[in-house]
Length: 414
Ligand code: C6P
Image 1 (cartoon, rainbow, N blue to C red):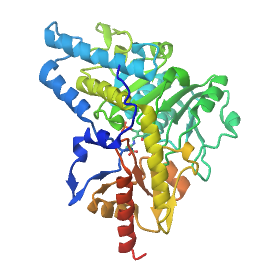
Image 2 (cartoon, rainbow, N blue to C red; image 1 turned 180 degrees about the horizontal axis):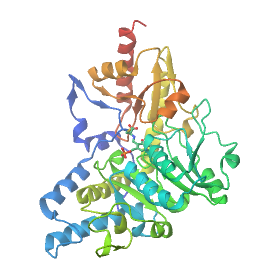
Image 3 (cartoon, rainbow, N blue to C red; image 1 turned 45 degrees about the vertical axis):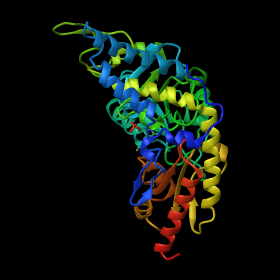
Image 4 (cartoon, protein in one colour; image 1 turned 90 degrees about the horizontal axis):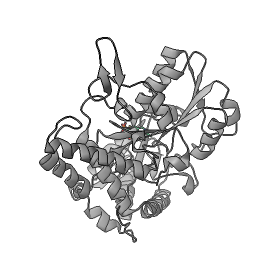
């Protein structure tokens, strides 16, 4: 739909993000908390504003012009995401509130329908809590067991014993494509092939993948893929569950209410066709429209340019930060095995103190367990400090992070 901008011009891209042009605590803002949520470009803000100013109405309901327009906008957004993600059918795209809700949907429907006592769900200890807790809830109710793929010292999955971890009772492997806490890019293809060979399905958490790499679900061959729009330049409150049509067809509805029904009787009801069976109630129409605008924007900038730029930033940041005494960077050592997330420790300075000092320097990063407490346990720490990049970050941003960390060292007397 969009022509890719052939030369990646970070200053031009940066200018598309009004929020970045501000001063915070007396310093120009350096936003390095992109793994938590990305900023939004003008294209997305304008589409959201235009939708509310010109087309807003409820969808699939009213027989009037605005409702027709809102419905077209909502369903066209689905079509756009389906095409971008390589789905074979638009009915495979279910709008959700985000990655968390997408995974909960699969756990509460497919999980509750299919798992019985003694069945196994294979996770990794790298998962965000949103890909652990829903399975714990289902395991409690069904008697299924959770097993885990462990991590090596670099924060990469140990896959040598994958064939033993996958048993005849494994019904699902649920794992992240890219780690939010370590930046590890997982060899998902290998896991998908091994899981399918054992007859297990695979759910991928793509929250930290789609902002940085081109994902084609048909080529990947997984069975479910979940992501959030807000981490890839789109609005909050909108996300997607992609699922194979034949699997989604067999699944029970998630929530009950308007929109998801075929016919309602006193004691029983029938369900709407896919994907509406999973979309009870008035959906986040503007969110879907904004998510599709974000897809347009990502493609306009071009994933090749984004990947090359972010890899360069990562290399530069790791080099610069390497100059700091007492710095420990977690995650894979090989650049090609990680995305633009740098989780680190600086001596014994507490991550929250580091984040507070950096904030006073206008540098926004995240400190904490990053909703990945099993990763923190593996690292033997309670929390890390995390800087994460997006397409609009520059080497100046990295320099400001570095200078901020020098201030931290000064304060802590190193
Ligand atoms: N990680 C972070 O700072 P939601 O909140 O549903 O949009 O996304 C949840 C989620 C699921 N999986 C992964 C790999 C994630 O990184 C996230 C969100 C943010 O790392 C907020 S905790």
